[in-house]
Image (cartoon, rainbow, N blue to C red; front, side, top):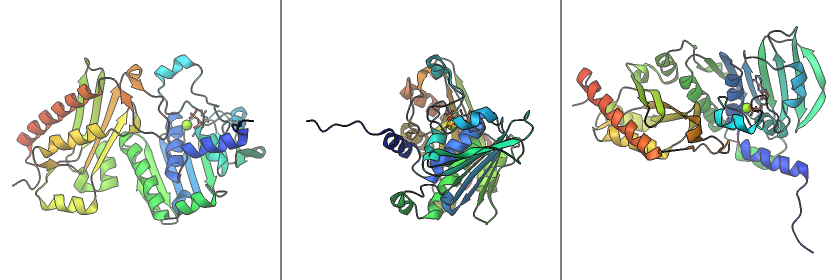
Length: 350
Ligand code: ADP
Ligand code: MG
């Protein structure tokens, strides 16, 4: 007799859900991406106790058809991908149809949604993955509100691993802040506990405005706009860098103390990490005795050259000719710094 057994379906689902949604910030990322996929221009995130007691994401996007509501929390149910051929030209964040199913598996989840052409909103609720009750008409404006109560409430060990609510809140803010800078045309709000508003971008379309509300005027003042197109390497890059400062200055010490040094990278609109690009950028600045407190780069690479099918929790993306692209960006930053030095002297440079 052998030892290997096929796991029951509900166990498989629970394990898969646990891989995608490990903490509240993972859920917020997925929910915010859904809002952006739905074309929202206003997104409000509300959290209580780090998102564990309450986590709500409200948008003014396309809304969901009443008939689609029973499918939103089914695994592998999506409105975004129809066939394998679509995979190489996806322009939406989502396409797996896994996120809502995963969140619903480990919480009590309510979806309230209204399409512009519908007479009213409709809502549906799930508990630990199963629909509770049926679709009901509801009050609510155009768009979608997803409310997640008691995330991980059935898992004592997960909840105790996440008992530092301040840390979880900070991670949620961090996630939203990234999207806010990347999408200055969208107004983002984060409300934490009953403390009022923690983050509010106005959706003016100006990155400088977003940096100002997120990190203060000091970081947002005279930022350097970045823009580079390289047809031979098949990529475009745009971004923003807070005015560099000399690493010998008092400001550098202050930045170190506050650990305020951010490098944010998007590839084809997805926030990703790339250690090689981060360190090469720091080296380019460092070679001139400079550092910056905030740098955001958004790369557009031909989709066929990027492996999009990385697991949702793995934020490391692979693309072709990575080393050449990084070198090209390094060269570009160097020219930008040279040109910039002629215009401004970096703050506090001796
Ligand atoms: P995916 O985004 O990969 O399609 P999700 O589980 O995140 O999978 O969402 C499932 C489906 O629910 C989406 O394909 C979309 O049709 C719908 N949906 C989820 N959130 C929203 C939203 N905020 N606005 C409109 N539709 C949504
Ligand atoms: Mg999604």
